[in-house]
Length: 135
Image: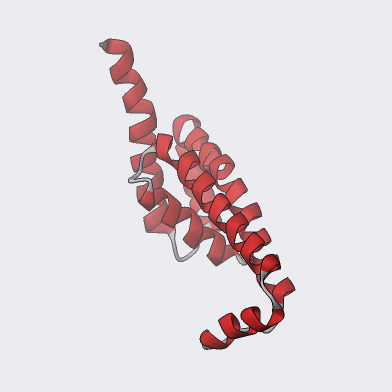
């Protein structure tokens, strides 16, 4: 998967999770299950049904392997998202200078969005824990 696709997917998951750390794993699991469901559907399709599905898309490629391969790559990318978020949150907590460097280097074109997403996730994750301890 292309780096910008990973960044788009990561930001989409964080946004759909409403910047809640607890929701990220659930959303990743839901997306993986959806990809696996699509793989099973495509594998079970007859060639005619598959070609009919592809012909409905503007730039379809008439290869089950192509679609299945894309879905498997998306699954692998989705599996990396929680680890990447944990890494960025650890940097937020321990070394904001290094976090800033990583964001600028790894998320070109997404710097502002990533900075905001990590800040909001960190507030959710670390502030929620502090509030629950003080109650």
